[in-house]
Image (cartoon, rainbow, N blue to C red; front, side, top):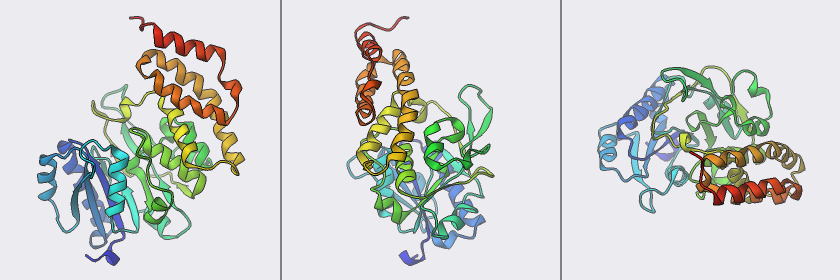
Length: 314
């Protein structure tokens, strides 16, 4: 296939999950076939674990469509670096992400591709079927559901609930827009996708689409999202302020301010369970200076000192 013939690029970052990887790739191939896109699509598996088994497994699949590449800085470059490299080496006009432990449903491209082709939107967010942490074997639908797709994208993303979360395997973006805003921030080792789409909601056009889920999300012991703690949110917002100039975006800044007021104390309280990360929550909390110095209360400072000095109660 020539570059002009490629319309869709599916980027699959992987890190030593060869057991799941093959199903992820095959699900994308099946979705291509279902939508008649086989001759106009490609899959890039970006290996951040430099895993020979993954290389061999991908090599046995359709070599005309599936490409295997390794992160350039060596293993463990991080999911943001892997996705950015995949986009950089992709040839498609539209970029779809797929986590290596998830898989697409056959309807993956049915709605989102037409939306991106229209030229009116930069990104599309859809829903997934997700296994629940608290109830093994039970699934729920997460994403733009139950009317949440009627919210403006920034408010939707800031809610941060399971019904309004960002699941990479249900996202799509034009390559032009992705490159224009600088891709995902590689300084983040978790929630880099959340920061990217928050940024996109401020500087771009996001379409929230309810309806049939487009992917299945597994929950297992090595999920990165399972390891995300409550301190991550202020760190994401701090990174967002680094990447976006808010001087002429008062409305967006005030929306974030209102959400941060409620979440910062909650994030700090949850540090009691993981006080080894006090430094990270404190660094993330520096975003407060952009809003209102009164947020940094005596009680918050006292709590940080107490949690940092005294061991956790057993």
